[in-house]
Length: 452
Image (cartoon, rainbow, N blue to C red):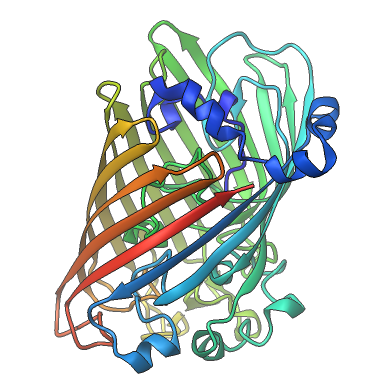
């Protein structure tokens, strides 16, 4: 859910830094519709950028039946494209006024001198499509009229493959030239915890349409305040830090009257060819009563605080002009006091805690400026069957191998076909693919990304 300018982002967050000239040409597709209709004055005179993204694809797997394909969500527990057939994953509208700053909040510190003037900005992202179902925020867009009846009836949303409206980014931003320089954002925003960050804008480090299991464990939105600063900049690299106070996971209306703490440390080499991020979010995530159960984000109902934590250590390195690799190690835990009035809505009273961890890595070969091939592997352990809910409550180890390519057909169109093989190693007798019949699944997917 990051809306950022490519020239500010730097090579360290792109698939290949040395192809900057080609990337600038492709960037013309971003905002091209508004520029063609109204001219460049909005951006040139006011610094406001308006752009769009259409994310659509076709997917099939080798396990589902015809009835299951018609009924929706037949790819689960895969996410990104959970329905089979032709799917409108999302169409996005972005309106941004980026900061003039030495740090991009939630993304990276930047090299160069620190600006000495105040800067003000804002960002808004609205989307419509199947993926809007999981991009909504409690107390905000969760129950907008456009999201009925699926907002209260997930089975209906599944059967009818209902599309949802969400606004996962709506925040103001400010840069203050104090000390090393401080950037603030306040409002509703994607926390950018983890290696993969939605949506699939060109700058995002998402080589595939399907997502990792680790991606499912991470919060989609938060609401609150986040401060970012650059701690160090020199020949040995850059170091940035972030700290924020937010309501909770996917939450504007808090369900337990507590706050959560989120933050990050971000290190970059001076040439931005290598980076390492540590990101975290910690806070109580229980529903205090049954009147406002914010499921599936918060599975617990309890009058007592039940601490939840999520940690991600991730990074990226460019070996040369063609080869690069990214990787992530994720760990999380939901505490539980085991008391009779601490109730898991899936397993019942007496919840006494759950933990999960995973590792994933992606290797990319840039064959030519407009064509890249990638291979991703993942191992994810959820022995308590907790964190992947509602996509799965199975207890065991989830594994996946994905191979695919990205072809930038033009400045406005990119194609991403992929082939993915998943296998599950259960603790007991769970079978998670093919509506509970199988422990392996082969999935083929072709995604089109249209930038306008």
